[in-house]
Amino acid sequence: VAALEDEVWFQRTREQVISTRADLQQGLTGLGFEVIPSTANFVLARHSAHGGRSLMEALRRRKIIVRHFSAPRIDSYLRITVGTGQQIDALIEALAEILAGH
Image 1 (cartoon, rainbow, N blue to C red):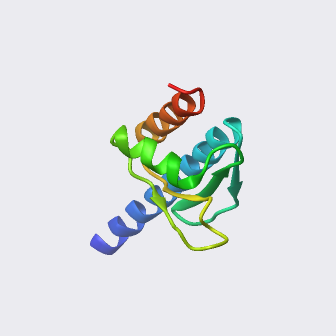
Image 2: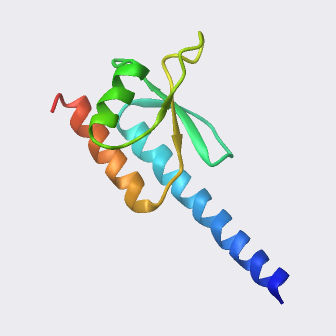
């Protein structure tokens, strides 16, 4: 019985990540981000007008943590973990404010 319950939990969680990831990708694209297609629990995204490091720092000041890598070829990208719907909404709202200069 426990194994079946774990399978149900796994499937529910998997479906939630897929749905929330789609919302995240759509929100980022709507803000002008280029989003690399993903089947993982994170996305890589970059904005042509803002550097990855500066966006990461601006988000950190708002208590939102994303990853930035300084390695060549990916230094303009943010690695954003797929969180809950509330977390994604907060991220998109914060990015919209940052991009608007607030």
